[in-house]
Length: 104
Image 1 (spheres, rainbow, N blue to C red):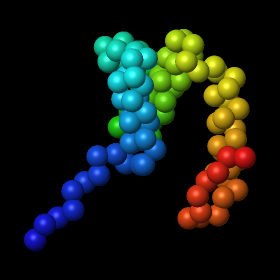
Image 2: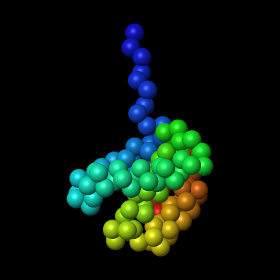
Image 3: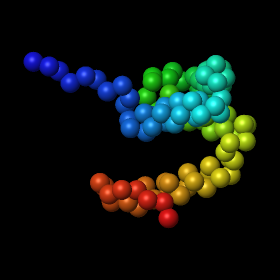
């Protein structure tokens, strides 16, 4: 009898964030050592307040690192990210369960 393997990521957005980071790296926006240094610094600062378990707290730190890294590189602007986040939260909150989320 085969057992279903454990998922690699706890949440779909964890996998999407990881894939986005890999895609940006492969697109030449930053090297993996540069990313590792930035993410390591962010983990350290996030980890001082609490233990990171590889779930949401880990990937929220990952998101924080990626946003600040992209802003520092001039690839994304912080104010644009804030507007997009607000639009996403509004769209997600007002979309019925099971329906596709769309940002107007």
